[in-house]
Image 1 (cartoon, rainbow, N blue to C red):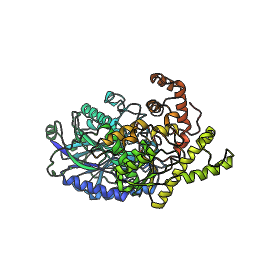
Image 2 (image 1 turned 45 degrees about the horizontal axis):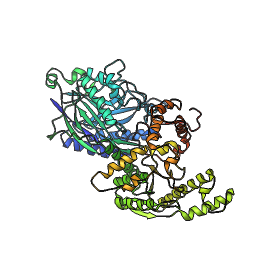
Image 3 (image 1 turned 90 degrees about the vertical axis):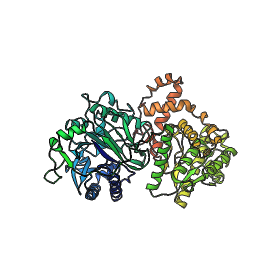
Image 4 (image 1 turned 30 degrees about the vertical axis):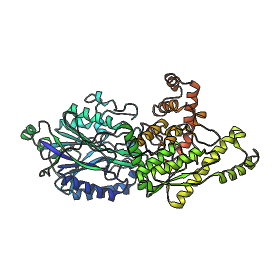
Amino acid sequence: MSVRVGLAQLNLRLGDLAGNAEMIVDAYDEAVADGAQVVVFSELTVTGYPPEDLLLKPAFVEGAALALERIAGHTGEVPAVVGFPEDSGAGGPVRLWNSAALCWGGAVRGVFRKHLLPNYAVFDEQRYFVPGTEAGPLLTVGDVRVGVSVCEDLWGPPRTADASAPDGGLPSMVGGEADTSPALAQVAMGAQVLVNLNGSPYRRGKQADREAVARTRAAALGVPVVYVNQVGGQDELVFDGSSFVTDADGQVICRLPAFVEQIAVCEIDIPGGDEVAATGSADSVGSTRPMTAAARPGTGAAQRCDQPGGGAVAGNVLTPMLEPLAEVWQALVVATRDYVRKNGFTDVAVGLSGGIDSSAVAAIAADALGPEHVHGVSMPSRYSSEGSRSDAAQLAANLGIDFRTVPIEPAHAALAGMLDGAVDTGSPGADPAHDSGAADLTDQNLQSRIRGVLLMALSNRFGWLVLTTGNKTETSVGYTTLYGDTAGAYAVIRDVPKLLVYELCRWRNRQGDGERIPQACIDKPPSAELRPDQRDDQSLPPYELLDPLVEAYVEGDLSAAEMLGVAQQLSADPDVVHRITRLVDIAEYKRRQSPPGPRITAKSFGKDRRMPITNFFR
């Protein structure tokens, strides 16, 4: 015996209730036409994920209920499993269930309510939802009984930090006393397949961890597991999809591509299915009836959908997982595309310095939006080398993007002269290299802010969205100018450490469509070029040391004192480590005023890391 499950991996538009409903019914029709006997969607499909404080608006929740009613009304004999926010009827702001509706025959026939509400990393579900308590209802498709759960419910053991144990330590805990997954009760009730609706954001290595959890769960319980995830960018989160199915032995038999919308049908063999069909029925695990006002779902009853078989299925999709650098690049591309387009823009502007960071951002933007929608702006100063100017022009030519030059020297000289007179530090236009350190830093920041003003002026004039170019390492230690290189709408590589930026650029150049990033941009020593002969390593430790220090302190949640142990492991000067941790701490006010950017690591700045600005703990 087998069952054909449709996996609907969609790029939803958060808050577009009517648009999402249209997308859902179209996907349902496609899956049914391809032979699906049940169609499974992602977590909170109707609203998009995560809806955050939209859930506090009663009109939003009411609108989602109306959208679900429309979706359910469209269904025929084939059931659809659709995520939505359900009003519990309780008073107060935390009044919702994170639910999965079981729909067929033009109505909602049952509802499963999420039990385990994650409240770590980027998740904040206990702010909005109350937990469900019933493991049912089961959904019966023909002779196959299906257990439905939502995201964290598959993992089971409580977790407190996404970064502390990549797989949550689950494989060693499945079936133990700490295992709180409703999947155990569902299998005890007779579930022969488990389907799990997800809103699982991407981070590096996440797919291997998800599959490890599902494989362990499937093998321990002896039932196949269906995992459906959404795809696309939403503010600082990006969802990779990567929906998959394991068989009852824990082997992955279906995997949809990462970062791509797709509807696919997977045929799943049910172990011992013929024996179960001969000896049992849905009625043996509970009564079946449509949902009514008098009989609300959420009990242990099985909700049965008898239906004819669908069309032929050629075979299960089994897309290979992306290799690590390709995975990160695609995450950044999809996040950038969706941020730009979902916010109503078509074109972007990028300040091009000829350096590695702006080169990476421009290349990502060209892949995301098409080169005709990317505008590179070179803004040379008196300190810009000829090589940097020519490298920026060559990058634009390689990418096929618009390129224009706006020298900043007139504004730099005028503003430096005005400031020089105001603070009485010398004659107007004096070379800041001969001034004090404070005057030097003031002049460097002035140049950066002039560039930020020019980019925002072009944004105003042409309606371009400005992409900033700071990487995670610089953002961590405050090696950025507030209202200068932080001026913009989206920080594409904000969560990408400096050394990974280099790796990504080298990877992109190996993809068979020519040298996208000029080798000179990759080879040159990194420099802000805001004073004569400036290099980053004059102000910061080498990135080979700085990147692991930042990772340990930011992603590892260590204290400044604990970082001394890291200093020993890296053979680093304790004074250098103390300086770096202090720089990370005091730069919080800058990060709070900087644009969002896509999350690709276990802990990014923003939703992941919410540190106080005024803070005396070290």
